[in-house]
Image (cartoon, rainbow, N blue to C red):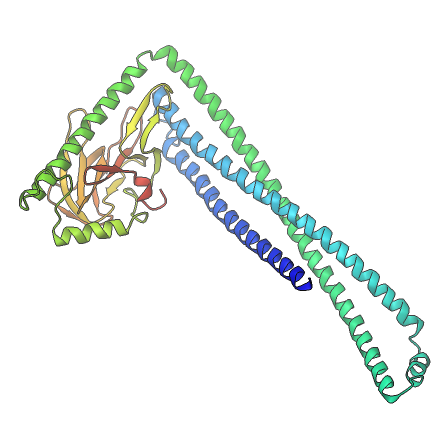
Length: 405
C-alpha cells in the first residue's frame, strides 16, 4: 500500500514537472512570436506608412491597412494565448502558496508543542532523573540516544520552518512579478485592440468612399489579374521548354521533370537541404501578400491567385538570388516590369517586378548576389517584388523555404 502511494505521488510530481516544462517552453515560443510580430508592425509602418508625401490611391491605402491589420490581429491572438498561460501559472502559484502556508502553519504548531514539552522538562535535574531512573545500563543508553535524537529532530524542524518560509517568500516574489507582467500585457493588448479598431474604421471609411468613386474597381482587379496570369503562363511555358531541352539529349521526351547532370543534381540536393533556411530575396522587407488563392482585401467577393509572395521594401533596394544557380531566362512582358528566372537543378526561383537588371540569361549567380533592383511605382509609392519557387513545373509556397518568412 505504501509503495503504491509512493509511486502515485512520484508519478504526479513527474507529470507536474513535465507540464511546467511544456508551459515554460510554450511561453518562450509565444514571446518570440510576439516580439517578431511587434517588429513586423514597425517594418510595416516604416515601409508602407512612413512616406507622407506620396499620395496613394484608395485601393493601395486599403490594401496597406489590411496588411497591418492582419499582423495586429495575429499579435492580439498571440498575446491572448500568453495571458491565458500566465493566468494559469498565477493560479497554480497561488494554490502552491496556499499549500505551503498550510504546511508552514502545521510545522510551526508542531514545533511550538515540542518547545513547550522541552521547557517543561528542560532542567538538568529532570534530565538527570530521567537517566538515573533507568532500570539497566542498556535502558540508560537508549534514553541518552532518545534525548539526542529529540534535540536533533527539533533542530531539523527549525531548519524546515526556515526553508519553508524562504520558499514562500520566493513564491510570493514570483507571483508579484507575474501579476505585474500580466497587468502590463493586458494594458498593451488593450492598446493593440484600440489601434486595430481605429485601423478598421479607417479602412471601412476608405472602402465607402471607394465604392462611391470607383465603380470599375472589379474591372481594375480583373485587368491586374489577367496581366499576372499572362506572366505566370509565360513562366510555365519557359520552364516546360527548359525541361524539354534538358531531356532531349537523353531521349526523355514528354517528361515533366528536368534531366539533371551530376553538377545539377548536387545543386538541387543542396537547395532542398536548405529548406526553411534560404535567405530572403531582399535585405529588408515584409510580406504584404501571401501564397495561393485568397480573397481580395478590398473587394471581398473577388478572389485572387498568387503563385508566390509579394514583399514590400524600400526604394532602390537590391534583389538577391536566394541560392547559387544559373539565370534561365529574363522576361520582359508588355505592360509589366522584367522578371528573372534562376535555375537550381530541379528548382527554379522567380523574381518579378524589377526596375533594373544586373544579370542576363546564362549568367552564373551565387547566393545573396544582387541580380537587379526593385521597381518603385511612382503613382502608388510601392516598392514590391514578387517571389516564387518552382519544383520542375510545380509551384511551391515560399513560406516553407525562406528563413522565418
